[in-house]
Length: 164
Image 1 (cartoon, one colour):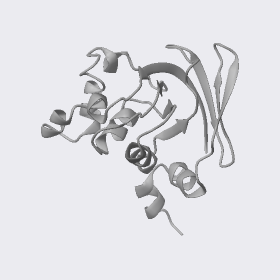
Image 2: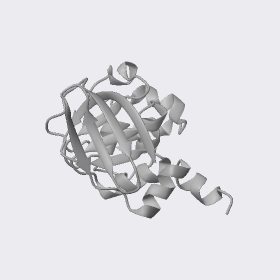
Image 3: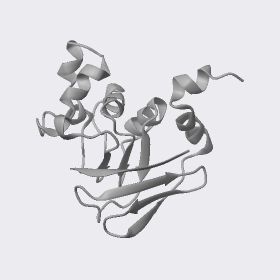
């Protein structure tokens, strides 16, 4: 599926989708290239400007809880973030992430700190998150084969529209 490295950006437990992107921002536009400027603005107005392409969001429990806004996953991707590593995900956010091509990885994130360099190797049969900075690896359960296929295609629309 994918291999990449990035800087860990910690966001904590119970990150509500409205904290990812305020629902009021959708009144102005649904253009994720515009909305990415407001990523996490409710909790940290400087966060969006500090994101570098390839950063990896690292969360605790229940990432993406709250409303089922699909735009939350697309705004994360638009900011250049390819994956979210969390102890657990809200199931609706998890599926929105896969459908939009954002890799959701569930594993114990307790020992990852802000700025750690992470490597992610995601295969159909195994997912490993390696903390290069601290020298340890975390095994994560692989995604179901259908979800892995959707992610490999770049999201649900690309998966459905691909030639047979």
